[in-house]
Image 1 (cartoon, rainbow, N blue to C red):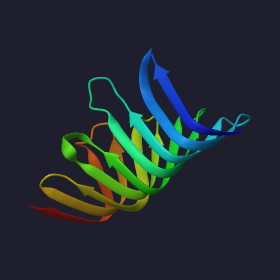
Image 2: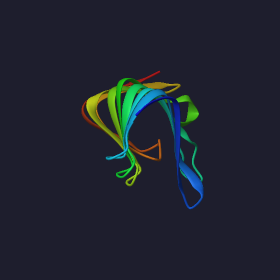
Image 3: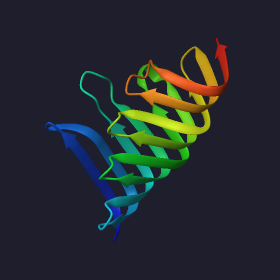
Length: 137
């Protein structure tokens, strides 16, 4: 089933965990898979700043609580730090983002690049896997 202006809010203990918006999407009701276009997602965890994610396209698996984002993907972290990549996974049950693709992370006074990344819900804890470069300014 194809829909426009999709909004999905997942809650746990009556608190929002993920607020997902897409301008267009297709829902496969048999598998609980939603294919999305022009994705905006807000990931929330109590006591922490929300993480906002923007992407060209995505796929959300409601059963697994996993979001796959593809295309130009931008993640707004706290303190004006931004992360860019072409493929990003959100593992909702583990509360981590991962990618095996090239990543650029830019803050007010630094720039990090690398291939592969793990980011838990604490933006201060980013792990780049290989080919890491750091620039301070």
